[in-house]
Length: 386
Ligand SMILES: *Cc1c(COP(=O)(O)O)cnc(C)c1O
Image 1 (cartoon, rainbow, N blue to C red):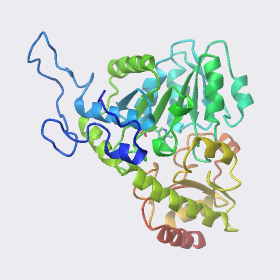
Image 2 (image 1 turned 180 degrees about the horizontal axis):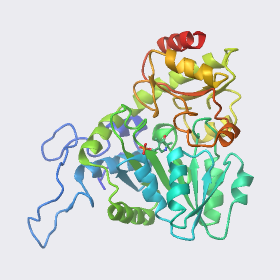
Image 3 (image 1 turned 120 degrees about the vertical axis):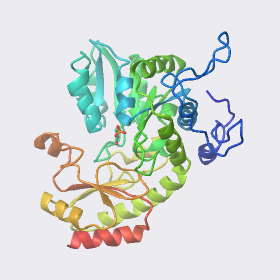
Image 4 (image 1 turned 30 degrees about the vertical axis):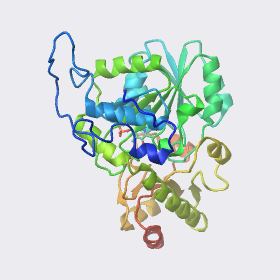
């Protein structure tokens, strides 16, 4: 771990001064890309810090220390994708273990639990985590963990992190939280007692739709040792090039999030004021369920706005008529991204289950980028009128 006294600095300063921002050997203004798989032993009795890049690479290490600093944890880990991070973390558990998972968890996590981990005898119960009684009721003698995602995707439901975490600690459960939507700029779950924070860094952290990566940060050294063993054992690591590119993107996280959030608020309010929109989901709207809880545990509302245009035909017409946003899966980039959960991220979900969870055929999810918000609104306006 890089030594630094940056923990007391403000978040914006930490983003720039994270410990490895200057190369010690040459003074270079960015972390070198150590494109090497193995490291020479100059002295066999005194092995190098890094000996093989699966086990440790200086570029990846800089990124791992960076995310640990930002989340306020003791150790960070970088993986080949968000799913590689999540899969690796779930392998902390063994046959016969049970985990409680938020019902509107990311689709890939749902698939991992129900098609892979179930085969290994790791059992899961999906609950509505906005309902604390439901979380408590899911406890079994073999429960080992609780997996949260808040705000959830795509209807931005809010879980009370501190409440779930305090209860989990009483029962000696490990708590995990997918912090992809908020990023450590808005929400730092470790400060609320969460044990492992996970990220699809492909989204806001990378921020440019040009790198696939996952990150994890742990609250304790004990978990750090266990996750390190898994990362090395499974080989789910992030490469040096991607590690560098991700750090390059992360430096502007606050500037990007501030801009996008301000625009997202404006977009949500504009949509909310329209009579032809059935419903708008955004934690910053006055009537959003869980808004007060969200405000206690997060410093902002994020850049994702979901809204229901009424029916599938209208949703498709809007998707075909918009000219500015990318029409695609994913989120959290410099360019706005409009996605259609019913046919994209949640296509595999049975229609009834989808509808029960508010993921109607008319639901669109807008990830607001860095374009001028008035241009984005004008573009969406013409698409909605179309
Ligand atoms: C995209 C995403 C993931 C998966 O990350 P990949 O980098 O695509 O593997 C996990 N959780 C959330 C909330 C996501 O949006």
